Length: 126
Image 1 (spheres, one colour):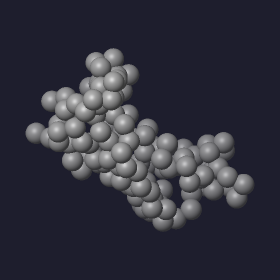
Image 2 (tube, helix red, strand yellow):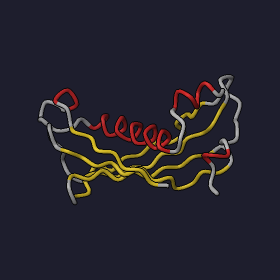
Image 3 (spheres, helix red, strand yellow):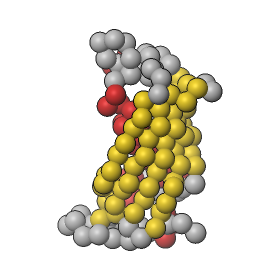
Image 4 (cartoon, rainbow, N blue to C red):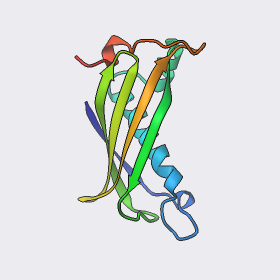
């Protein structure tokens, strides 16, 4: 499963040097995941209403090139693994053809009381 979304860097997302602040890459990755779920047919809100949550177990980002205010980015979100209660993503952030950052996350599916739950069928690997 792969999804792409375009993101334009807003002024409020930059630091004092005019570069995209490092923490906002993680926010972009979250945007990629939630929009990918929506494309699969269910919003994250609907996912939570079904009694399931996805919590971040691991998150990593590698910054390759600087990104500035008003740059138009394309975020590619790729499901690497969706099995049992685990959902793993890879992220590739591009400015045009330039790869500017990569990332990886591992999420765990739980119930509101913290019990581990299997991913729903529509989200698991086929």
